[in-house]
Length: 282
Image 1 (cartoon, one colour):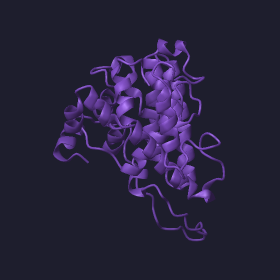
Image 2 (cartoon, one colour; image 1 turned 90 degrees about the vertical axis):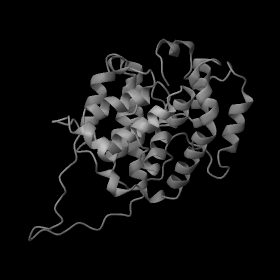
Image 3 (cartoon, helix red, strand yellow; image 1 turned 135 degrees about the vertical axis):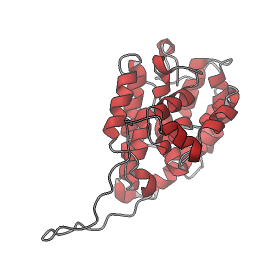
């Protein structure tokens, strides 16, 4: 995906942790009745089968986060569950989206921290480990990471080392991340943004990032909600909160207005108690 530069990085890895699967045979054995044609998929199939199993992504994330950052691990498990639900609703292969959900916060692992910007640190580690480049790209840019990279002065570094992943899967990953609280509860996107800002305080780069990225995050959630609403055949239940994380009919304007109406320092939800500051990160 990154041309010669990507090949140079991957050529040094002899045993990738997550590798491309074998292409399944299209020939139906004699005497076996082929299954009915699959339903049309919204998620792109050319990206949906990149990794062998999401189980390997889970094992890798668990080895880095479960003991050192148990609260972070609860969030990651819930984001992965949300991603599986999205894939079920949209009818696509879950491999890439769910694998990215498992790995999106791996850069928080204490032994992987380099720049202190977890999307970049995580993506660098995954590339060194031989993980497929489309998956690495999703981790590098997850949840509007480019905006936060610019805030931290790392924007040119991120763009020089990685290219953005598939836009639809990136939208779905952002949606899953931003509808999941730090403790793994399903929340509305506006409440998630409020919780992040309240936890970090007005002077933190993460707060500045949230202020700049909130319109794009809300718009992304609106796009995903519209997709989910247009595919009722894949499940009648709403993905997160009963009213939806963003009302597709209003285009997220109500949620954005509610967010802006809460003063800094008072923008709290039940999942943003002061004890949450014991662990850094969104």
